Image (tube, rainbow over all chains, first blue to last red):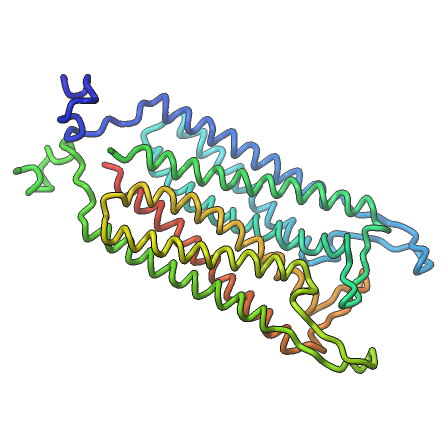
Length: 193
Length: 193
């Protein structure tokens, strides 16, 4: 008993490491669930904002009405698909994380799986944000070297939606980084010193 | 002594968790160093291939000579910067990882830091691959809806370099995912069952 009561005892580290207190495990997973709910909200917002970005406008330079649709750009279609996958993933993992708050005995295994999958989804969301960002930047500035004209001077609503969606998906990437960090840090905290 | 000699002893798990055998730590870090050397090779290749992609050509449609340069596209400049950062990072972490092979006692702390930083660099490389990929796809296919013409029919060498570089940076992203997985798995393996 003496060794567990006195952590400074040199014998302490030779004994079995104390399991993380249940409150620490629950706190970790409460933060995990909060981040996953944020991820879901961000993914849903990003998808909805892009899908509702379509704009029809009369273009004076061309002399007729033209429509800007996200479906016209494969980059934006990839963005919507990737963020939808991230949204679905966040629902599944929020439920899994909630189950751990009620039954903390499987938490180590879940942390390992969360870290593995979160990294993959981070790669997906980061690349989709980059893809859509690169194309949105071309829409905003154009590229005179290859004769690609900017379109944001005509389609203001379309571009505002894109910019908002990109900001939200950047936030989703940050949330995914934090989720991986949380899993790694929690795993590290369970290793006896 | 008996408990450390007989891992099947039921008292074994109640005692101090055995530190990972030095050979296991060294094997983990040998794999880590190998992956980091691969990451360096991939980042260097991707940067060199893009930087040497410039092509000067007579364009019949325009009636004069024009140059395709990676510097003309902010997306490709971002790609080169991001992959250069990943290359530098891989040199520093290869040295850090090598130091662990010689002095394995700090390995747990290094695994934690590697996992934290690898995730950030993964986000950077994945987003850069997405950005350059989105713009390269526009160069290959164009976008008739907004009047962006394809350029790869004229600049074949430029586009071949871009495609090769994108493939290599996708490989770099996969290596970074494997590096995070390795760190997480190694940390998980040190938690007593």
